[in-house]
Image 1 (cartoon, rainbow over the protein chains, first blue to last red):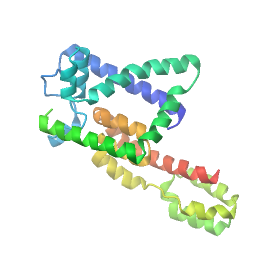
Image 2: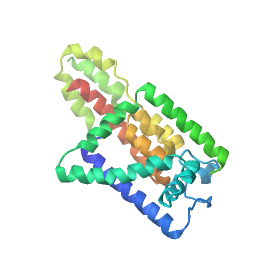
Image 3: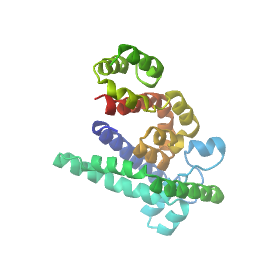
Image 4: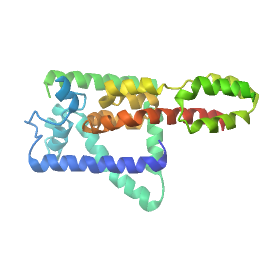
Amino acid sequence: MKRDNLYPILLILVIAGYLWIGISFASGQNRPDDAGGLCLVKHITGIPCPSCGSTRSVLALINGNIREAASLNPFGFIIALIMLVTPLWMAYDTLSKRKTLYDFYSRSEIFLRKPFVAVPLVTLIVINWLWNIYKGV
Amino acid sequence: MDSQKVDFFIISTSKYFESYHVPVIREKMLAMDESKWALIQTLQFKDPILILVVSLIAGPLGIDRFIIGDTGLGVGKLLTCGGLGIWAFVDWFLIMGATRQKNMEKLQQVIY
């Protein structure tokens, strides 16, 4: 990933994320009790994907229901953290003309590729996925 | 470097690179020292077609991005279920180019 590509991609993703959360929040759809959603994997195969339920998890976090957010999908915490931190970090980098976010991104890519990090994380994701299927999120 | 070797390399690996990369690779390799030939031969490139197949099957989980080395984007795709399917769909068209670009970056570390 080149530096010139990272910031626009992140900006698009964060804006899309906020729009999606905003639409879901305003329309009242996709609430914790609603089993709908846009996930293609779930609609085509009938099996929830590893991140199914994360929109509802983030909405539950906005409403302050931390336990509910965790039981829907723990990915919601990671997504909420990324969506809170990334815009601030990008603004800081832009204003101070530095590239601290890019350096962090590059270093974490290398870190995540190490087997002793990657294997436990993949295992966790698979367990979370199995839990998702079991819950029928 | 011997032009016969360079041409052999180009013929056997051209499918791993964008067409506009090939003349640059040829030029750089011809000007390169013979001692690097062994190093270049040990490089392993990702097949764009194979990555496209992975993307078609496991795109929403970001496996395609993980394999070509875009770990950060892979995590992004995994967390958002392929960007609600949209990103996964767009990546069906982008992933072959991205794979070739990654292969070029790998080769660049040796020939520059």
